[in-house]
View (cartoon, rainbow, N blue to C red):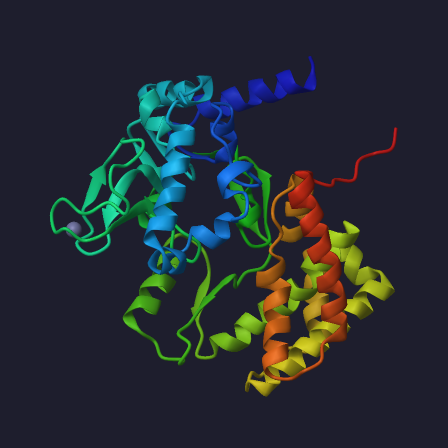
Length: 384
Ligand SMILES: [Zn+2]
């Protein structure tokens, strides 16, 4: 029997023996319906990146501009119809005791196919949410008559009911509860790449490479009600969380790794262990971290680990591809500014030279430009 057929039989057995399933779907399932990803688009909006428009800051700066973009996106997906994948999931829901469909997609195609127990963690393109009273209106007008649209109840400006960069996904408590009681977790058309250092050893099992993965804290070190709630949410989901009184130090520990391992791996295609065990790149990572430490210390940040310990930690994670390398392979926009540019900017503000970070930044920025302008990904494959 061919390998793929064996896998199908295995998958079928898993599904048949699980009365309660959680399915997570992402962009992959919508692309079959012709829904574009809105990255690297031609035409009117080609000079904007989603990161520049899909934020609360962009919206409040220019609500009309952001709405024009969403109006255009609504127009681009208005004729999309559910595909066999959507219909199969709707059918599965009617066969099972319970199926919770969690989707990252905002196109509403699952409901159109007949799924009813749907959690839209990134919202819905066809809903307008009032920025004042929170009322949600279903709206399928293309184009929308007046931009920005006004709330029918209170008259205030409405916003797209979608999750923007910097906002919390929706329905997290419902998702956590469903995942806790599920017998099987299926991911379709999405990779678990956004999750920190996680692996999937077998279907339904996510292994955390390190234990204390979700430290939270207020910038002033206090324990507020909201931080307690966030902490409890992680803990109740079976994840580890700690409330820290010095979250800045934690952020810089994370930044240390991000600003060095991510761009180095993007440029070299090396995994964490590759980078750490290759003397020259290990030294380069250490130099970049030392520069960042000088910058951070000017801001009063203390580091509770040494650079050597931070590198050993990364080394023990093993053959993990950093998120930036995964983006290079998939042809997605790199997190150049957030991970590297931001550190250089703080370096400028504090008048701290950072030559190693600056050099790596220049290289990875050009790589990003080429990936974006050529619409290509770069993946190493076995030579023929
Ligand atoms: Zn309102």
